[in-house]
Length: 300
Image (cartoon, rainbow, N blue to C red; front, side, top):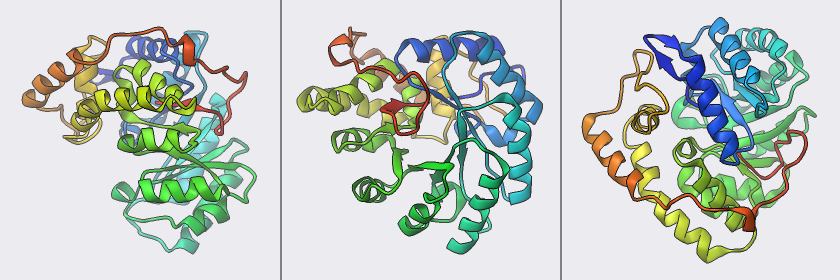
């Protein structure tokens, strides 16, 4: 989920409004303070206050927290403090910039796992971290009881993980959502689902219930939106689209800057052409009472 800002401060009413919107659309959970949430630009106090604001607006969705950084000890210390908010789990990338070996990555994650009893989801995103986790590394880490899944952003690696079945693979590449769900994928964390989340949830359920043609039609309708939402650095296009819909202010924390006016005009046209809301009861699936990273889900 994005972090709404207004006049350089976290906009808590807007965060509550967004969380309600996603809950009502059928989203299964929220990931706060990842790269889309400008997590590295927020203070720990801001994070705790935003978690509390969303939780106060009941019934609240399960909340997973992004937790990453260069220093293993610093990440572990932050997680120990965030544990007081009782999150559903943590989304954790490898250390940024350092480009550690696979052995160093395993060491990092095992130290993080010792810092909390909460579930951990690995986050394999080399374009942001500068390091690629191998399939073997992810599967080795899955032997740790609290490491429950990986958010994988490369479609071929995602397919390999899904078919080997040794660790739950969540789709982190928005363009690969249909292929992931059609091949039995269980969940995703897609930034583009911020905009018309009802359509992304509907596409997932259509694909998972074997309604391939209808799922493909919806995927094709959403594809122009997905392309535009990554046409400029994330999360600027997502925030621009949400601002166009009146959900939040179009504000980011520097050095991130708002998306261009040219992109805003293109987003406005694409959003206007999306399918109208529809009753998804025909492809509705029962929702588990508790959070599970292995449950069929779209988490923003």
